[in-house]
Length: 286
Image 1 (cartoon, one colour):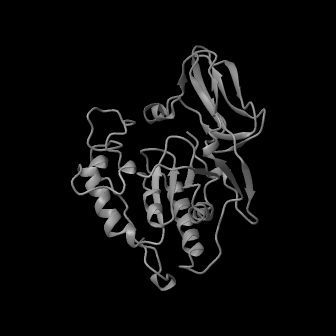
Image 2 (tube, one colour):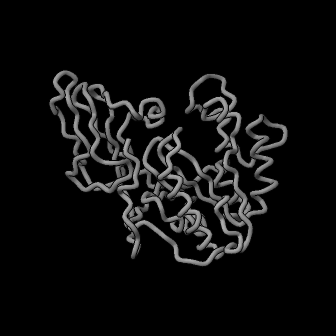
Image 3 (tube, one colour):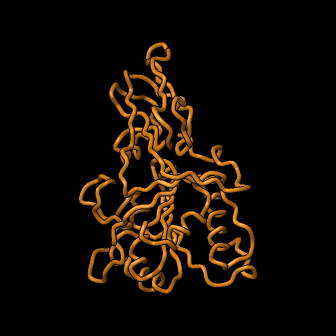
């Protein structure tokens, strides 16, 4: 925000660097908890929109932001962190939201889905305000490469909304995933206890037969399994399933026999952006 040249901007930008302050201060996904389990939906601020005045602290926060700022906006971008591949997402019912999602342009995996009304990027839609979600890996870390990509994406949105002049800077490949079809995520399991050596970053484009990684034994570090993609798709993660457990284990290379060590998801459309820049070296490699 401090680097924006106001002379180049037409309109107003409202930014909240941090919304859920109590959760951040207690190093939790949400606040408050009835128990310490981050994937509990209890008081999840991303699912507490538009909030209410007589609710808990989470609902009070969202109510204030929604009524004082979001309802006065022309578009909303909700930034988050994830423990799987980067992705951006929009409600499939909104052409304007889908366009924003594509115009952000810095993430290969673009998801369109039917979104719950209480989510941060659906509640504005009920008032005619397009909104998108942007999820960056890794979770719970500061990643300067990701921040740089996010700044480029925000600049693309300003250009797309005619708030700034210039050319959008997109990556070369974007893969559309229609989440309403609920195509199964194919999982690969470890054949034995060992150590997972990853060779592909999360979010990369896989072809059938590509080597995702290798499992080596725990004793002499000999290869006991090639982790091979069974089909073309996107590498969703190389970690435990369900993926929310990656919060605690995403950087653990030790694997157990039968444990999920890779997830591949199909895509519905491959968009190639002319003059787009290379992106695979910018993906997150756990």
